[in-house]
Length: 166
Image 1 (tube, rainbow, N blue to C red):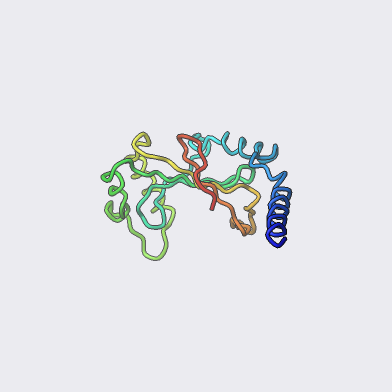
Image 2: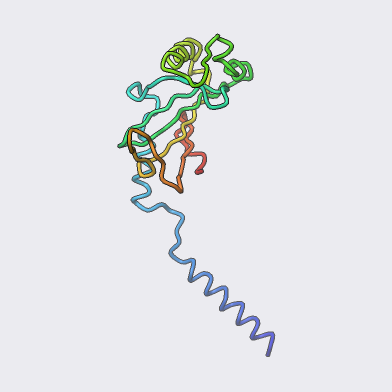
């Protein structure tokens, strides 16, 4: 009798489990599809979004950032397809005699942009975008502020495939 009760209990537990899972579909809702489609329609390489090239915080990768209150913020990362191209950017600014004392000024960034434009042939790079939708961003006193918890999407520009959520 005890064995039958255990079987019945297990069957009821499994049945309850499946009932609670019913309706949890992996297919995105229409609203999620609309958002995803909108994000994939952003041409991150469109010239209208171009600002200045710079280097990432570690001075190893060329980057370009853009912000618009309607589309959000994105930063493009240009990753060299071979080791030589990757090493080219390691401390690129100091290798080209670009220095600053306490903080980089506009002159530094303009000169860095010119040097990067001369060396960067985007066909030799994989380009990824770190994208933040406008819902996580706001401007206060001319400063861009982030709302947390924050979701960043990493998108391979060439394939438009979202590769990670952070």
